Amino acid sequence: MIASLQGKTLAEQPLQLLHLEDCPADHKLLQHSLRQAGIVCRIRWADNLQDFTTEVSTNTFDAIVADYYLPGFTAMHAWQVLQQQPAGAQTPFILLSGAIGETAAVEAIQQGVADYVLKDAIVRLPHVLTRALEMAEARRTKAQALQELQNSQQQLAALTEHLQASIEQERASIAREIHDDIGGALTAVKFDLSWMVRNAHNQAGVLEHGQAALQMLQHALGASQRIMMNLRPPVLDQGLVAAVQWLAQSFSQRTQIPVQWVCPHTRLDEVGPALQVVAYRTAQEALTNISKYAQASQVTIELACDRDFLTVEVRDNGCGISATARAKPKAFGLRGLAERARTVGGWLDVSSQPGTGTSIIVSLPLHPPDCEGDEIDPRCTV
Image (cartoon, rainbow, N blue to C red; front, side, top):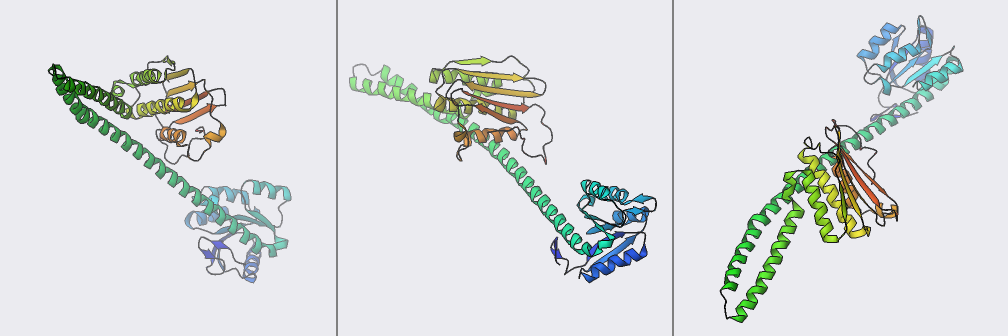
């Protein structure tokens, strides 16, 4: 009869047991029963609540076996004392009594007691003890696995936040280089070509090529400006409202889809840079998806801010997103937005039905709580 217990077995190392019993004969009977079953254990004995409290507060036990009725208290009083200890909830607590009724036994198990055995059937105790130890070890293993998963999620969240910050920094750096280096160089070349065109006079060939070069340069300048704005629009430094308005205007000019802008609140002074970037990127990604897939004729962007939350909603009247499309393994856009929101304590909600349009809402707390140790917000749906 062997049970695994934190890397040891009942046959290899002695178990540390505590027996709460006021009858010496019954204590000896328990020792004999376990010895007969081949369970090697060290048993400490307590016959009153004070000694029991001292034992569980100064020693660690693999299991506790207790009589139900004792002078002046019951085993449930001892159970409550055990729960106050750091590892009390993980220690199997088995009732071994000759007087407990079935109702009392069921109530005790409902409160967390592992099992009960009648003294007349003490031969069952080794089996019950082994099963209780196995179940306790299973709970410990599960708790450890959940803790490791939680740690992994926290590490992933920290990595995601770091990567997002790195991406934004890199975007800002690239945008500055485009503006300062490429844009400056193209502008200088444009000035030189303009001078050449103005002074070409009767040289028709030079004039024609110069004008063509000017057109290409103008195109390159426009492209560099567009790329720079997509990477890190300077208007974002002027505040979230201005940045999202510029985003809406650019989208409408590019796609010819009208955008209704709703901003009933102006309390945006408390919105930090990190939240502004999350809100802006959510609106940007939502508009990108609309232009690619929605087939919409109307878009609404609503920006709201109260004392606790910043909320951005982008909705359209397009074809909607099917559940199959949202569940695709490579549908990283919405998942990325949800993870980005989660890194600042917020969550993303996507509401869509085929043919009825789509609504994407990101809610960001202005004062995010300490989320260390928390699981992913269940409201985050993608």
